[in-house]
Structures are given as C-alpha cells and as structure tokens.
Length: 197
Image 1 (cartoon, rainbow, N blue to C red):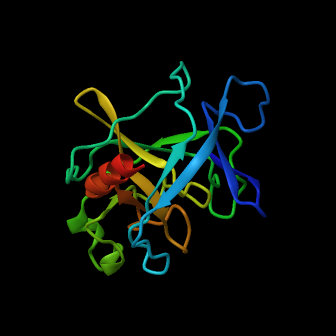
Image 2: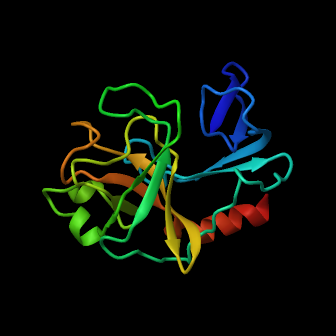
C-alpha cells in the first residue's frame, strides 16, 4: 500500500504487511520511499505502459505477513482459465464502500484472443496487458488499481499483473474482465531500471 505523507511535498511511504486498514498495532512495517520510477512511455489516455517501480530507502525484512513474490519469465503468457488471485482494498461493489480488510478473490486469466474480441474489450486491450475475470460476479473495482494479480506456477507465487483498468459500466460486468499490465511484457524494462537505480 502506497500512501502520501503530505500532498504538497509529494513524499510517499510504503506500508508492508497491512491486512486491516482499521487496525492500529498490527505488526505492519512502514518503509520510506527513495524514488518512484514511472515508465517513460506511460500514457494515461491510452492506458499503455501502465507500470512503475518503487525503490525503498532500505531493505525490508520478510516475516509471516511480508513475503516477496517472484517475477514471471520474460514474455510468458498464461493460458485461458489459468487460476490467479487478485487482492486489494478497492470498492466492495460498484459505487460501494472501500474495503477495510484486504480482499482476495480467484480471477481466472482470459487469453488475449478472447479478451480482444469486439464484445469483450476489443482494441482497448493490447498484448502488453492480461485480462482476468469477466464472469459478471468477481472482479477488481475502483481502488484496486496498482494491486497485483498473483498466480502460482511451479510452486512459486509470481506477480503476473498490475491492476490497470476495468469497466465504467460497473465492476462486475460480464465480458469486461479486469485488465492488468502484463508484468512478463516488462521484464527487460524492470531489470534495466533495477540495474540503473
């Protein structure tokens, strides 16, 4: 979870290990941010290259509530129906309240061939994105943006997506799955930025 300390100075902090936003002393860790690296070709109008990295000032110790997830192999595309999990504190339903407790839901991958069909997302979805959901029951919602789509592969959890956008018709719209930035399309960019910073 990324929080602004003061909007006038644009300093940020990252809270790790948080589960319930209403709980005070829950063992979560606050980390200072050294820099935020936004993709140079990010375009908020076209919603492309919707990815950024956060460099913390100091390393964070793993614990029972703080664990690292792996990056997927470069270029990997998961098959249609692959089971993944979305997590976030976004709205519980369209125009509903924001969640206090971290929500988690199974969101199967929808392959590009399906998601790019005219009655799905059509040309709005690109190969650098991954779709998941679209059953009209479970989806990401406003406030989940930037959160992960985690998928277990070969016994390891990998971050395959970053919540990018959903339907303006409502969060749980049939054939309008949640759209994520496909992390595996940006592995070279991620490695380049890590080595430079």
